[in-house]
Length: 230
Length: 309
Image (cartoon, rainbow over all chains, first blue to last red; front, side, top):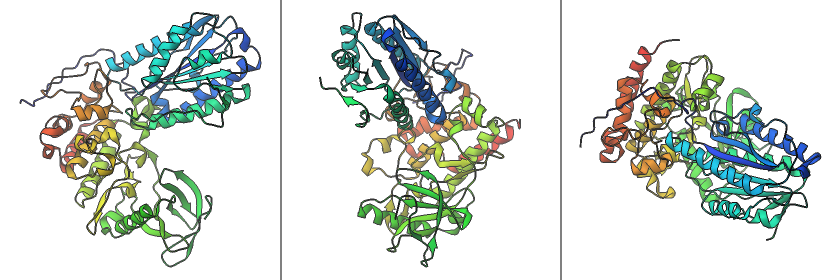
């Protein structure tokens, strides 16, 4: 066998040249429907900002965790794209506005599709990736056709994605959230938004220090909110 | 013993007063020493009795190492045992090293932010120091298994780089092998990865393979020789032999991949050492993996040709 190597190079755009580290795509899929108005949307905004700040403070996590924020309130918006270089506190979404209905299904479909595109982009550019994380938070009942999207997300959860469904307050549609993941949903109150995102950032920091092939099971801490029986 | 103020003694029973805790890991905590600003104290977490006994034997073995290892400026080698009130070794004292971890070298964007004055010449110095230390260790049958950027400190002013996690090294003493505490999967050789964790051990060939991948990753700002187009974790690709140049020298990743921009900037001798590691040295002939002497020589040459600013 001839072992002489020939390296052919060109000057194409090098998308990940500044940061070739493995990536962990994380989609925060947040309900911003009208019912979130008041303290809920304010607390959520602050908690998400703290999350970005925490990830940015950890050098390795800031290179490897790649968060994106999707909001669904009337329509689905990818408020913050996946970070391609390094997470900074200023990447956190601007003002979240609570308005409109709750298109949960459309939000799930958008998150799934965007994560898959992101993973494809990593593969095209030789960037290893951790299993994707989806954090789905909702305080109400879906107003669109959500069942098929939920089933697809649950299947991805069964196949390695980490899908955490969080019921915000007493009126969230628990059966709908339970249909989205193999992990039981958890109900939390407004005052627990910050502890949840603190736990999430700590978990992602730990993930970023592990090998990409590591498949440690993820579970929400017992002290957080209440487990919801299906 | 409390978590905040453990009762510690030296070999003659004098009390050691730990100061501020500066680090905590899975295996123990590191404190400043109140009596001496140039010394740090590592105190192990309690462990099952058998593990604690093995740890005591390992500390004794490290303290019995030759003077060159114990006094080398690029190694924070254990200097003295630290005992609990029952006379058991629960840690050790080591020289305090000033510097920053190598984590900023994980990516160009972070190096520019955290070490803005650094050039590839500084990075080359880092790898040169590591290769020099590895040569010294290998000659004494001591091997690094936990290749982790956080286990090395570098001085921003001149890039002198020191190993700070010496008790994680694999060493042999008195017919006993004290294994590495951790084997970083993405920098492990295929033969190490193929074994169950409890059966893993290192020899010169496995050490050389791991070190070569680690050197490459530092020189190429976080790129990994086994990150390839199409996915797979580096450790999966190591096992399959899927590296960024294929078995016949054909590129397996797109030429626009980040690995190329760094790789093509290396000197021909450095590039040849990498290719020898991942092609012949992968599994066909593990003895073909470059020696640390070859690395030191190639890095010295590379350093000379790199611009100083």
